Image 1 (spheres, rainbow, N blue to C red):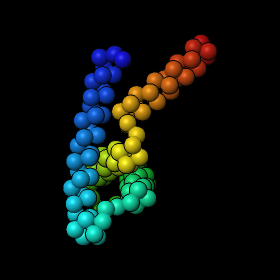
Image 2 (cartoon, rainbow, N blue to C red):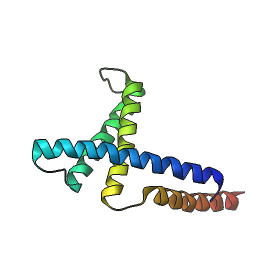
Image 3 (cartoon, rainbow, N blue to C red):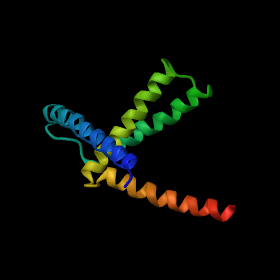
Image 4 (cartoon, rainbow, N blue to C red):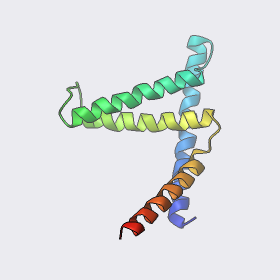
Length: 120
């Protein structure tokens, strides 16, 4: 692993820890309000709802969908929120996301580099 990859992995690890902290606060509220915490399917639906809204915000950024408010600010917020959801889901599914990300990007990069070499 290169120095840059180690820094990237550390950044993901820090983000993952922050996501867990925020999820812990949501769980406290859920426990008080619902008497339980959200199930994995409920978490997945929360993620897909926010991801779908990103699609609408992209349309708004392209001026093909009208929304109230600051499109750029909403996009920043929802994209960050979607990243948070991915960390939450990975945590609940016992997936080491920093490791999964690194190995997946390595695999994709290797395949793309081979394709580019074949085309030259």
